Length: 155
Image (tube, rainbow, N blue to C red):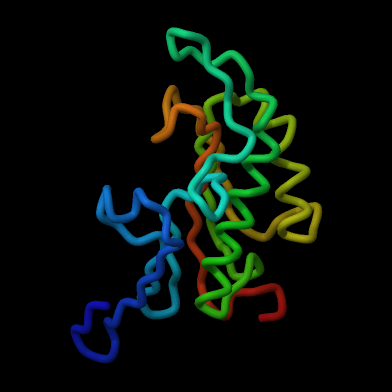
């Protein structure tokens, strides 16, 4: 935690994934009433990617059927972090999804997002970005979030 006076205390949280120390970062930072979640992955408690992408011998992506499973797990991990700050998806004001396959993301992300946010029209800004690579070869999606405490549906 960094303390520069009452108005600028940062609260920091991690999930215990091995790459947090390797890369040197926190999964979540709260500054004042805003919570910033670093790119979340679809990993289990042991750090294994769920629904891993299949790659050919050259490392080229050949199967994206795990996209929905990874998206679900990614939102689950983000939800666990939000809860640590007393927040929920109702407090999320912005998300950015980085995906390896746009077609697979468009086929699965809307359904998962509607379930997670419990509405047909999630009340946050959302951006979907196609990217040629993510941190782990078997990774299909990474999602960043910004939440503001007190911005939920009931406010």
